[in-house]
Picture (cartoon, rainbow, N blue to C red):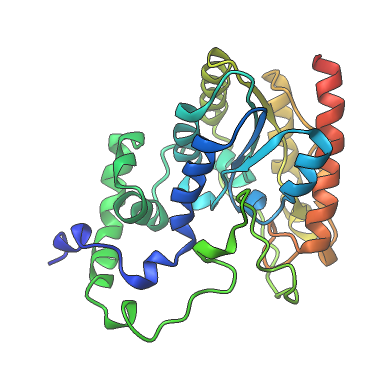
Length: 290
């Protein structure tokens, strides 16, 4: 019963999940015309960009591939690489957590993506990830036999497949009041393997004719103060390894009134401000790099 649930079709509730945006975002990667600017990261991007402003200011067609950091950096990079074309610009903005966790991270959200939203993408996972995903199988499988997955549920107002606009940004929360959350810090030791994997992606993207930049997620000031040393360590490591950077970590630390419901999710005011910063930093970097 537990393993048969893996192969039952997605439930009506899960079909409305934000994880099914993976299908829409692949379509954007496949069909958006050149010149393109492709954003890769977690929900700091999905809840943190106004791609209309980016398109109009930079004269590039944005593709916001971001869904959630729980999918892991490996999945994000591996899923982007096959779609890259000559002339593409890629902007990576991973959450700070990815620098302090296993590159081959596994999560319930990743399992749901692989078995419900995008079954063919199991090829992007390592054997270690597949083994670690087994712990989430019982809970996931049992949902297929839960009546509440089929009747009487309500789609999330912000974490829905329908929350994303035509560029891949979440705008469903722009008219909603901010929601309380608890600032939090970063845990663990810096994982140098993440830097190596980012370098490998940068080289593969360059071979495909694309240009790669890294930038920093927005974070609220209270969370930054808890983990200031770890945040600055990320910036230091990126600079030491000669990545093309947009701005600096401190520039993207924002006040509480720009945050929506987590230390990385911005409200409309925050989105507009972060987008303005990113446009300015990109123009500066583009001029410097020709």
